Image (cartoon, helix red, strand yellow):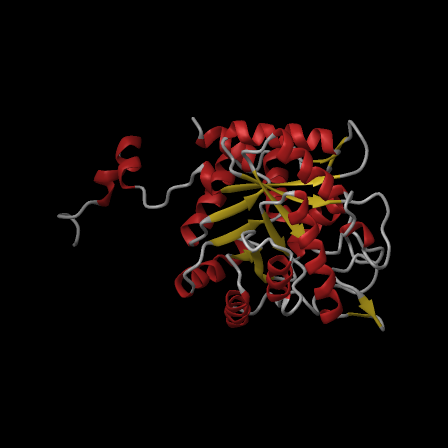
Length: 324
């Protein structure tokens, strides 16, 4: 094919032609909306670095879940901020914990929407790390037991799927065994398989109040320079029983998403994280770019790279456009 016989512009000349040959389809069906639940009633606290997102009490969380259902979004992902934090993350396991209460309330009022829960300890520990501390270090195997117990408590409350994000070795196997033994063998696991130690989590740490009080998370989250290691991490999660695999963040790891899509035959999620969201919002507020177009272009890029599922704070805005 060469010019002048082949002219690609022929099929770009109007929107109907462009629609007919569009290779990547972005749909509301691809979206999951993350939400932050806090204690109290009638609480809806603005997250300064994430415009349009809030820390919400259970009553508002239920209303927001109902709004997502009306927008056609199939699932929400819950993160909890407990009333009190301690070194052993006891709030993560409590029957009446903040996430457990939110799960029950959503499933009672909005049963049609899928409720996915974050399984990690960083929001619940006084030190802000994702696992239990022993001799000044995050103790991998000790943490596995707590994560499994947390996942079971979420399943008992009615969670449709659990999503462990702690990046502990063996966490998928530990959760699968714990869920199966507790009679929740039908509850799937969405694995944060390739979760990088990224600076783009900054706004999330404000939202979830989960910044570590000492050190950082590079001893358990992945080095941003590594791609082959991501494939090894995903392989381990698949072998341990993951139902969905994930790459996080999304936009700065599109190459990893593409590799994962090509190498693994499982549904693939990508997390369009808080920093990626905040950059677009900040630039749009300054008038430096068209925020709506930047949002849709970003989400389309994640889909084009191979993600079947996109976890994104843009979900409600995108759904309003995609649903037209």
